[in-house]
Image 1 (cartoon, helix red, strand yellow):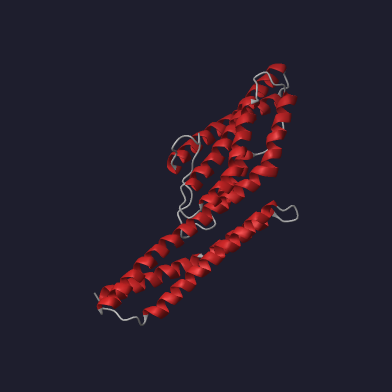
Image 2 (cartoon, one colour):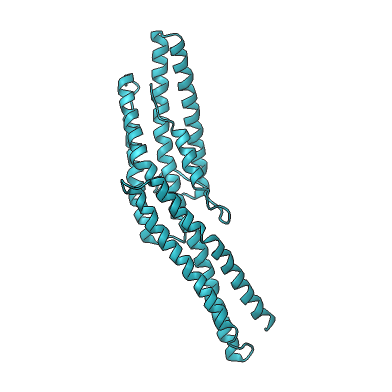
Length: 281
């Protein structure tokens, strides 16, 4: 009755996504039908609900298995087999919900382009379908050998495909949050330049020192965009056979972390310009 520890895998996946939360609020997670208008808050509640179901099912199976190993009777073996069916089914459901959770969070991010979202959705959706269909393939009459084979199918899918996909999706969430902050600051920058132009036109402001200040702001914005572009080229390397997917993910996240300083600096620059304008109104 061998099984891979999806609970431990899920914890690892969630943990890796917390790297850049120093400045950003991270996941409020999701999970059910894409047709519903899910919010990440509701989706996270669904994920927590299914996680509890899986943990209970796994605990029941472990207890039943230990009971059988301690006293190998036919009745205890049958009890363990039944608990295994429930646990494996709950695990597939949890994986489908977890992936839906990530999808829902990504759909809410303003910092990702429609192209970026469609790219990752095109990978997540088939993965959700795999676990949904795989769950439907379990039967209460499955033999232990059949269950072990089906367990191996899930394990292979998880190790060869799901893990890579989840790392890419978690990267996209981090990227989308950072890019969203940058875009919000760019909108403020546009408003400030309009205020400066209006102030210069009315004689309340002079063009100097804004030319130098605005140049510094534009340079910082370029740095942020360059970091985002570089990170996007790094994350795709997780799919290269000769490249460590964890190394690719870590490098991409490290590049995004390099944007935390410039984001804070951009905020200070814009605040300083705004206060300068206010003082002369």
